[in-house]
Image (cartoon, rainbow, N blue to C red):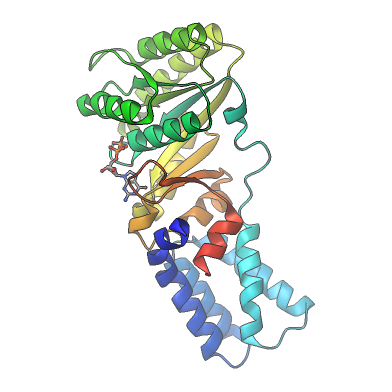
Amino acid sequence: SRLVAGLSKTRDNIVAGIDSIFNGFSAIDDDFYEEIEETLIMGDIGIHTTESIIQDLKAQVKERKIKEPSECKALLIDTIKKQMDLGENAYEFENRKSVVLVIGVNGVGKTTSVGKLAGQLKEKKKKVLVAAADTFRAAAIEQLTEWAVRAGVDIIAQQEGSDPAAVVYDAVSAAKARNADVLICDTAGRLHNKKNLMEELRKIHRIIDKEYPEAYKETLVVLDGTTGQNALEQARQFREVADITGIILTKLDGTAKGGIAVAIQAELGIPVKYIGIGEQMDDLQKFDPDEFVNALFH
Ligand code: GDP
């Protein structure tokens, strides 16, 4: 599958190591656990998450009186899956009149993800509108326009440098007038100026609350999976300025650091809702923890 292919580098990184541990040890001892721990941490699963996985694994091994290292593999897979929980209604916005704010720093794949999401919802017969509210970067408006054409959805945009909140105001008016199902706003994410960013997002939220109170609100942060632990740190910082409801983790196709998907959810409690595994329209997938871990341990 595309997912299995997309995760090949992460699989080579984590699973090849894990497999050699399962095959190389004849007893379940401290060294065995240490090797697994090290492999998971090297695979960007994160220190805290790894510790909790190992603890859980040890408890299971004890409880089930398992003696063979090879028998631990299935347990480990289940334990990793347990670290990820999307919660209920993760994709509720797809079924409601909704406004989706997409935030992210330059280059993470934000505009691309907005385009892919718009295209996929459109394919599901939703009436989608996108708003170019990242007015800071000149190319962002052009790029989103291209994606809107490709996706076959309408776009609301103003000139470069205009007030993002004004673009959102226009977009909300248009969404109501045109009876759109989902309005997706490509907004900026300049983390180096958190105060401004927080103000900007607050202003945008105020407009949506006032002009479109019935809309269901979703705030997705886009993170670049190739940056590993930095993506985790970025998510932490965004959490300080916005009420994040989910993560879009991009570029997993080009990286061995896909384990970061586990760390983000386990350590921050923010669900990864979509993953990017390529540059095409259908290379954005809903994140399914079972499928993800199965694809890794394929
Ligand atoms: P933005 O600045 O955050 O809006 O980033 P862009 O949407 O312009 O994306 C930056 C680059 O990353 C572009 O060349 C995209 O094609 C590429 N990109 C985005 N998502 C993915 C992905 O999931 N996989 C790969 N391989 N490339 C991606």
